Image 1 (tube, rainbow, N blue to C red):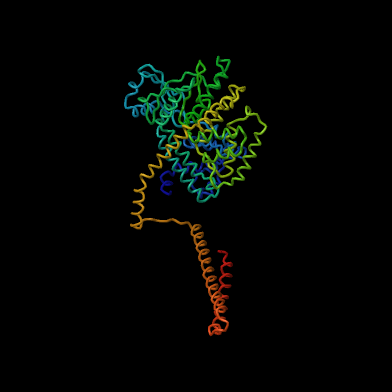
Image 2: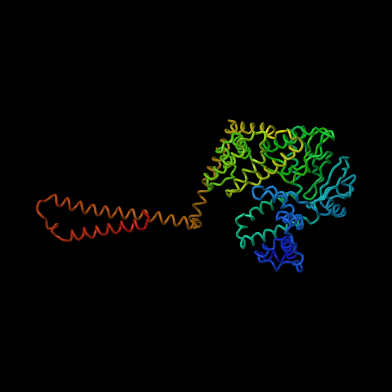
Length: 554
């Protein structure tokens, strides 16, 4: 940790100073890093009493640059973790960064594609169409005549992100040690999730792969398309795709010759097919990433963020939709458990009460007026109240549903989103109970069982080898050890009780039998040792009974 701080000292100071500057000085004090601020920052501290905490968070992230902006944009998808007023500000995050020079863009292009720019393109516009924190886009024409856009990653952005992520991880680890609420909110786990997504997003090969996959899926979807990816002109830092000649979806109005209702229906149908049929969908369908052609067809761009849903997750969604539609609390609970949202330690009675309360919210509301996105977000909020972690792809789904509903309600207020999604829900429910799916599942489980059996002799042999070498270790927690000792105590006490009781019974039986066999007193019965023995045995019996019951381990 200390090595990181020395290595990135200047950047550490920038981050700590910015935290103090935007009114988060208490956090800096709690971390013990107040003396790490840059000199003179005390006089720069803003009097931000007129700004909300959410707005100050947004301004802080924008000032700290690309890594923090992207982290904030990813955080804006987590309605299960952050309050709505914070999410609203995070959604307003802007990449206020200047474009980099044509000379730098040319160097990156030629290094990545291993050829002079004049050979690569028939023409290349030195002025970027748009610039963002990760890269910028230029329009160009290939030697074969196709009009394309070329996305070029910002110089040195990989090193900048790597540095910032190392510092953020360091600060969060320090915060977990010194600030109680940080550990309670599991911020370090959330950071690792976001960091992984960010590293994936800045690799343009991933975006090209995702675009190609959605393009293949779209072959079955009428009126929704993706740009053509030119692999020969793409790499980790460069992405070349066909130029999209279209109108931003929210600007495709009746006045401009578009059929708004048709556009809204085609967009929603295409997105729901990605989600419910294919289980692989565009994770950021905001208006800037959706264009409409003159034929009212939909074109999606920018595939840096995608969501994935397994078959089991899709069928659990069908169960969830079914439970919501029928307002059946137990079905909704079953769906939450099958999605692995709810952990086994949850208080089921309290969870059912909260879901019942949520059900009453929608009780008298017609299905056509229910917002699926809002209902899903409400469910996530209930799960969060019970300390349940929402899988990242489900939060991505919630974000996508909100965007879809927002666009549809803007374009065609009279179109009920439930009417578009209902056929997909029915299809999933039918698929869920399809005998062929059940047979395939059984076949897979049998195959897995055979595989396990095949490896069993090898695993047993390895375990025995470990035993012979003394390598086998058994891990027992303190709690488990206490329980074990308690059980052993109970068993031993019961055994002692039984032995004493048996001895006492044998002696008493001997005395009774001996007395009954003869009418005359025998020498044995005249010996006072019998009475003494009986007295001692009785006292021992009573003492053991008292000791056992006193220990509470009977």
